[in-house]
Image 1 (spheres, rainbow, N blue to C red):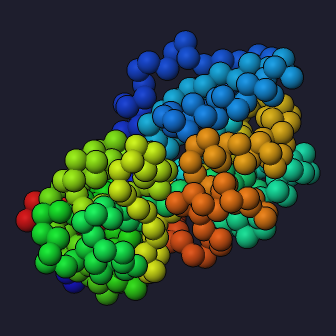
Image 2 (image 1 turned 90 degrees about the vertical axis):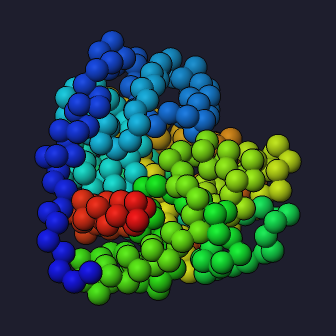
Image 3 (image 1 turned 90 degrees about the horizontal axis):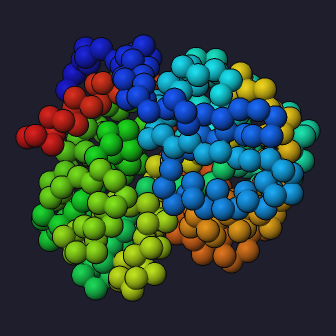
Length: 353
């Protein structure tokens, strides 16, 4: 593609978009007060499970944890900037941590007040989005590998499989440019975090084009990729491991794995906003949460692995389980975020072509 002259997305534009998305409907949702903590998460089954496990701590400590749900990191940031002091802790993704640090809205944690955090296996303390920072703790592993129908597809181990002519019109991949490009980079043997280099960008684009050939539709949500697999519209789909577990629980012949070239991760952490006045109580809650038994219970309830030391089978058998963070593809958002507009335009052109 040669020179790339499309301007990258700016933080100002991201925040303006997020402010529009979240400017309505948050009044009256926010808590406050010494006996109340306000948690902001992404909703869905994982937040429901998190809400359930916190009940014991709430009862023991006479503290009410109120839950607010937003769609993504951009909305989280809009709330933090628009309502300072109202949120006590939240769960940014790596993208969120990058945005929040740029906006300077997170406080450093006192890890001495969270001794149970040592129950998380050592390498995950220095997962790329946490390394050299003091403002987060690791939450759980989430990946976006491949799911396939075992009655239609033989076992395989590589991204190359989805390019075979035999699967014309039977593949579904995720619609988000960031994850799509990161997985294409892994499949091409390239580093997504070198995408500013023209040759790397072009190699990733070529792989995105090749993987596009057999796609009948890109999925926008976990429910949608489950539907495509359930109804056999897709015999292979990029997927989230926890969603595949739900399909298996309903006796659908679907398996999930991380291809040998790697797969992008959408892991999360917990963080405390700079303006919270309840950081001491949040530290106490986090220390309780990182007790081993609580981590195992939460992990099995949300169907995503929490990487504790010497994990039990209940965790290692989860589809997304990965022994070491180096086995996954991590996006360096300081590099990729400025490239988002260019990536989106290139992806749109491929999809419309």
